[in-house]
Amino acid sequence: MIAGGGTGGHVVPALAIGRRLRDAHGAEVRFVGTSRGIETKLVPEAGFKLELVRSGQLKNVSLMTKLRTALDVPLGVLHCVGLLRAFRPQVVVGVGGYASGPMMLAAVLMGVPTLVYEPNAVPGLTNRVLGKRVSAAAVNFRQTVSYFRNAEVTGVPVRPEIFELPERVAGAAPRLLVTAGSNGALVFNETMPRIAARLLSEVPGLTIVHQSGPKRLEATRAEYSASGADAARWSVKAFLTDMPEQYAAADVVLARSGSTTAELCAAGKASVLVPLATAADDHQRKNAEVIVSAGAAVMLLQKDVTPESLYGALYALLTDAPWRAEMAAKAKALAKPGALDRIAAMVLELAGR
Image 1: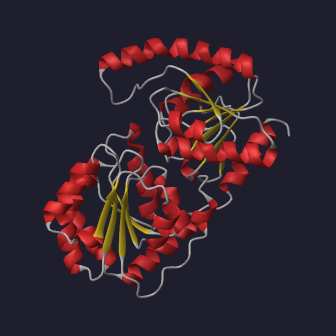
Image 2: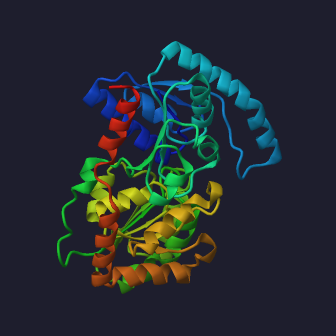
């Protein structure tokens, strides 16, 4: 049983783990999520059954939301106990997100073997509370090991094709990829149109692909158009469903610093990271600091993002090929290509297989 979800950062690796267990090892896999997460779309599309539980936020929300969540917790745990008794999983995997907490707590209370998947440098509240009580943990950063019992640095399960991207052709026109996950990023949608015309004018041959999220698609396109930027050299899309191809064509990536950092490392791409300021426990900033300390990215805190600061960071990378190459190599050195196989093996070990 795989529990968690909410955003693509939780659901995409969860599906990768589920597919590997099902397709390579014949496992029967069931997912547990909530009704408001992206798992309601992606999990059924992948051919898995999805159970829904009630759960909510405790961090960075109003007092009323915290009270509703507190009331939902015992009901959610009782519901999860029922799901465990019905499905009788040999292992429960928690991937983070709203549904992970009640299911992992129920599994720990019932003595079902548990594996936490933690991609962030600092775990969220649920994983910090349960870290020493779960059976094992698969983490992305070495500094995260201390939060858990039987933790192993496996890395993040990234699609194999992202590790196998072709080298960029020398002398090819530069490409900037702007991406911030399934919901987009307001700071990118508002700031990039204000600097696009200048970037395109001052970086010869540059093209821009910008993923805006669905809510701001039309507004972002309108702002690019109004900026005077050459319409033949920019593209704004709600979603990017061809990420391996997008990474292959990119020289620099502007991104948040959640699970995307693992893909940037696997792809070996120079990047400018802007951590989500409201991320629980400021985990995106801590993720970015690890990547930046290795020389594999540049970080701009959201409070420091202005048209001038963002232009300066992007222009510097787009016009300095040796620096980009050095940064890309350092990013690639952080990648962990065997993550998916090792996480699947840990699940099988807990199942006694």
